[in-house]
Length: 391
Image (cartoon, rainbow, N blue to C red; front, side, top):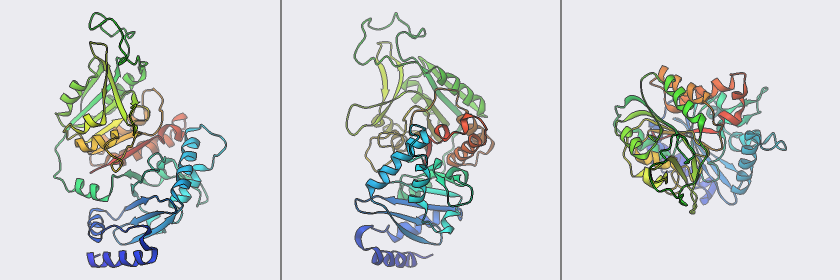
């Protein structure tokens, strides 16, 4: 479709809906189409006080759908999160209700697309998209069972990132985990630093399972690997590995909320010799420069605190994208401190299919969990994670 035809589409839509939902520029629509495959659909959400809107775009068609007001959608998101996490037994149909609200009116041509590129608005960032349930067919099905779901920072950002010259990355896995979080940890050198505890020392509990997690993930990766554990789980050593341009950086660490407003997440690393907690903020990460292909943040609530571009420089996912990461995988709620079956599957799929995108590999790993037949099949486990793609 030409730019002129795309512009005509937008004019007709704008006349129909008035100024309530501004259509995307015609040139952006055409550039997006050229960047998409036949199996892609872009779903761009815009939440408003009286009504919300969903733009759906594939290579041949642009459509607009009216959705409920922001407050109603936000309440449905909260209910879907609680139901998926298992924190509430009072609203088991919430994931199906949110699916119907967001996607129920989509034309069949869009429903059939294999890859859904979701540009979210504030209020939808916490939605467990992959775990939402479609009850429109005879047998209910989770969204992850039909579609690769990839959150994107926005069409313009996605197109610009995809147009960059391909980066040669080392087949290197870097895993950071089992940091030293308190002075009771036998690995901490008690002879170093001041003897008196400071306010900066948070005495965080040790994440014992994170050590096994990064080790298991490294074994699943077919390539070189470096593990940063104990006192090596530091910002200096992480940055040194980032300079090598690794394919994957996997961080299994506490993610803490800031005391500032708006709230953002900080990655907690090992105590320094001065018994200080080393915290990496989004501001600091955004100032780094790296060509890492994928950053995985498996810590609790690693996606929280303004996870996506468009909400200011406050989110860890946004910070890693700004630093140069091709994609980020993060979580929307607390996850168990265990050896990471989901991530072992993720890295196995990435190793077996180097051409696959992180979103495709995460989709395959989530399917493995769904079909596992054990507790990993519960969406409370695999539904916490989402992929933000920039390339």
